[in-house]
Length: 251
Length: 251
DNA sequence: GCATCCGGTTGATCCACATCAAAGCGAACA
DNA sequence: TGTTCGCTTTGATGTGGATCAACCGGATGC
Image 1 (cartoon, each protein chain N blue to C red):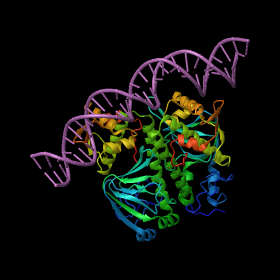
Image 2 (image 1 turned 180 degrees about the horizontal axis):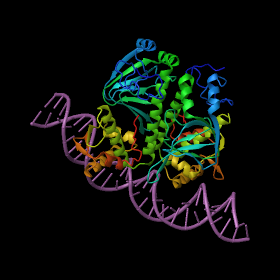
Image 3 (image 1 turned 60 degrees about the vertical axis):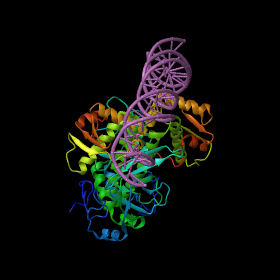
Image 4 (image 1 turned 30 degrees about the horizontal axis):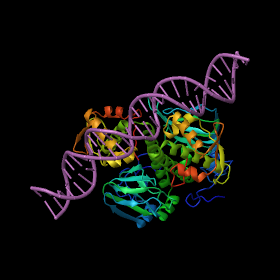
């Protein structure tokens, strides 16, 4: 049984299949009485690739988390300029306690299964079960770090560095999921279209395409088809990404 | 006495002068027994403008909040490229429970007074006093929203829009502090040098200077000296910022 | 088997912002 | 009163990535 303190137990219950909020789970004890309350208001929703989960500004009376698939958080200006501000991977939380209006467009990139709770009961439980707020705080702090990492990328990196960073992050994340070492000779699929990458990186899709071709030409990555990437030398990729930290985070 | 629930009482104790963590305070009841514990490990530190509070990577065994003055959170690449990822204004929290290493450079922009706590006792108290985690969660979620707003700016806005956005945000924030309406005919000082603005906006200082001159030439803002700004028509400024939301947030 | 569509690539050209360079200006100080 | 220094402005030029446009190739449908 995991300790209740979030402080000394950062990784508690990261893959709890029974827990309504799975994986990097909000609750540390799935069988707690408090959770039973949530069970009543829990429900699953599925979305097909491309489908919109919710539009910015819409009333939102649920919170939830991604169970399988990938979704994106994007902001759009009136003239159509778009910026992805977050990528939601399995276990990532969506929605904000206390807020009844969506702040971003949420779109399914691949087919997505989400686990949702009605917001009010969730909020009530959050007040009664401190561990949830603590866990949510941790997750939010991680997201904030990732967002700040991304600000450096958006503000100061070149197109080539941006692409290398994104590939490195996706590769590392993929390795984590498969529980393989993030060492050398990594191979995986890019889950995003060139356009989605462009939206994430603050570029145009043409530039994304060109830079991927350039990285391929220079032997930094190998491509099979348009999506399948092999990284022969991960450190080389990190160099290209301009990453000193080597800590690349992802929302 | 404010209600303990953060959910229905978002603005509790926002200006609590007695509270160790002031203003948008972490604690809802300053006189609580738990807070007495913190008093013992509380201390104040002052920094002069330009001084570094802590370097990224340094050991950090305190958390705290800004009492007066302005500080910045910046990230730097090995070759010197810099990106400001947050602006710390009075009441903003600094540090992260559970992390003993600073993730960013923190620099005093103006003279700064900070209220600090040793990290360990703070963390212990956080576990015992749920309200603190709840309050911290709220603050962190606000910061995350601000960071995401900033990602749109960094990724997709033009230099002119970036400058207009920054001026609007500083103006609004200044109005809030003075408890004046953020309506029309706002007048205030820019607390940042051109270089700091550039670091925040992902531009060069020359571009910042040129765009400020352009906004002045076009009558969007009036300038007295180099720092004092008057905004004759705030809505006009928001238009220039490309801001539909009109919700501009700031870390 | 052909048309269509979608995602992707590649080329030509343009422009917003970076870069390099010089000079202005107010504050502090001798 | 002049000198220096930090911050700012302005000008000239260069360039990375945007924009506009054409084409490719595989999947889907008729």
